[in-house]
Image 1 (cartoon, rainbow, N blue to C red):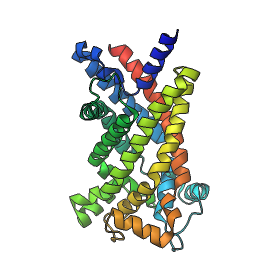
Image 2: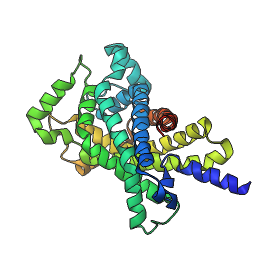
Image 3: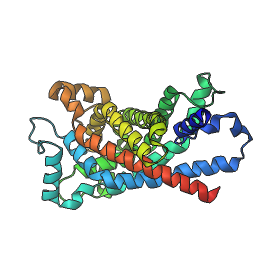
Image 4: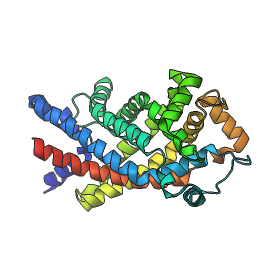
Length: 322
């Protein structure tokens, strides 16, 4: 009975990462299951990310608008999360809460699916480099590093989609088309303008992915023995992961948003460190946590929607293809 419980816990802790692929049994598996599992991760993460993004985009719109406004300036319009939601819906209509949906979906689906496809090779690389290539499963630190690295690499590719999304969401006078943003950024800053805010974006994404993926896996492995493998353990672990992610990533998210919003316009900040120090000096430490409430709410809902749907879709896809 004890052996059965131990095996169940081990399986649960590795289900998200497919850690069993690094065990000795994987050497005898064919390339078809490995390829099918990569495809399952891609499909599950793409569909899960799309669902989670559509559900939580209003919180993201509020977050972005709160982050770009500066305390005491004439641009200060919103007193908080709820006030931002209400004023935006009243002034621009309910559909304004889904501004930037297309670039948001492009960014989130592409970045998330790429992150999960490249995660396992990166995880195995860290295991080899850190002297644990023969271990049955990766350590928590190796999972954190692999998750962060995968996220940082993926968002580097899709940074342009986030630049467009940020400017569409902050625009409050009528409708701003994606093509208008692309033309303006290209005319003012050229190709490099689409990678505005790259450093804080990579920093933020590294922290987000490390916190979400590593914490989700760790929390799930501890919850499954008590709650069983299923909805309750998935929701519980995703909630812990979402809150942790919001806490560690908000300062970098504020800096990233400010830099991206200025692309193609007046240069308010010259870089990541200068932006962070200026925000700190001009607006105080609390400014680095602007938009924390919508970030936290969005992360809790997003992680729950994503991880639950990802687990279900991945399992169903594997059953139909293997």
